[in-house]
Image 1 (spheres, rainbow, N blue to C red):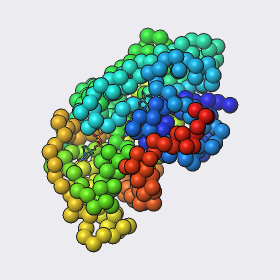
Image 2: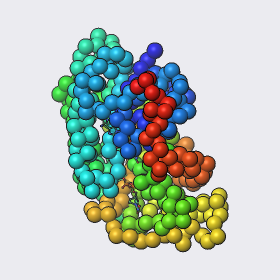
Image 3: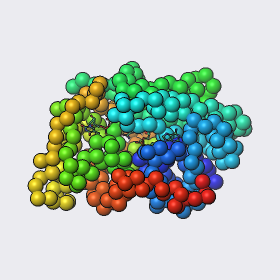
Image 4: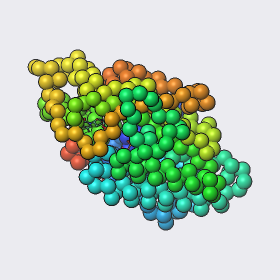
Amino acid sequence: MKTVFISGGAGFIGSALIRMLIAESDWRIVNIDKLTYAGNLESLAAVANNPRHVFRHVDIGDRAALDALFAEFKPEGVIHLAAESHVDRSIHGPGDFIQTNIGGTFSLLEATRGYWLSLDDTRKAAFRFHHVSTDEVYGSLGDTGQFVETTAYAPNSPYSASKAASDHLVRAWHHTYGLPVVTTNCSNNYGPCQFPEKLIPLMIHNAVSGKPLPIYGKGDNVRDWLYVDDHASALRLVFEKGVVGEVYNIGGHNEKTNLDVVDTLCALLDELKPGSVPYANLKTYVADRPGHDKRYAIDAGKIGRELGWRPLETFETGMRKTVQWYLDNSEWVAHVVSGEYRNWLDKNYGART
Ligand code: NAD
Ligand code: TYD
């Protein structure tokens, strides 16, 4: 059986990728996750009992634990998503970002390299280390232009700086040691199972709870939104077909101001869960985020031309699916809000981890 390690598989994007790979491929997945506040095994309930999904409660900074996993499972590759991922948290407490995104990536790269060196030539050549990163490493755009793979790095937040550092480590492990790597830099994702601290799930949760919808600054910052399953399909394609040493940008061609996003959400909620007053009445302008990047926009031409990737969802279809998912899965959100989701490991996995 072909085996892939997925780090951060209990997070938002990692869980979408695992659900997709279990449903649509024959990969066996070893999901390596520390279960920080953002790790939620409830997002993997659908595949919890599938023998092709093996969960291991491991910190990517724990080199000895990683070495043991490589020796036990002998994977064909690694897809590395584990990270601290929220910009606002990185502003309030950058330490974990440095530790996991830089130190953890270093530890995973070194464990991978040690294992990779032990492989025979055929398996060595077929091996892939896929590093999953963000368009935020390129910094902030003005009113025009888009990020391409050769755009100079100019990270502005502790989060994006730590991701930029990890991208550089991965690049160096390829150029110096020959490790067969691919890197993807993706725009903002949205969809089911996103922790309700990020813009879209936070706004949906606050709206249905009758709480204010906090819009930073004037709400005119622009993000380029991609439905998470479209990101997952791009990740699979790059992992399986990407050219070693290459970087691929991933994005949905959906540039929206934050106000556009919130207005779209409010209109969908008015339709799908009508309240006594329009949800847009809850919009509240609050102090801006320090160092708030103005605009991100991705040119995803390369992955389209070279690997044939296309997103399936438009902003309209993806947002409708997302709002409907949060309305249909209020228990998932309630367990996050109450902290109950943290008990999922003991209740459902027990000795198997
Ligand atoms: P997330 O915060 O939802 O999930 C991160 C996961 O990593 C969690 O399950 C957490 O428990 C795990 N983790 C954190 N530290 C760990 C450690 N030291 N060892 C093992 N596991 C650890 O993040 P996400 O939104 O799913 O993002 C996944 C990846 O994609 C990240 O690398 C992020 O930088 C990148 N990315 C995210 C977006 C986005 O819009 N969310 C866009 C582009 C790229
Ligand atoms: P976020 O989801 O945190 O993603 P990122 O900072 O990685 O782009 O935020 C998306 C945009 O929404 C960003 O411009 C900040 C803004 N925002 C708000 O206006 N209010 C909020 O409560 C949050 C969480 C974000």
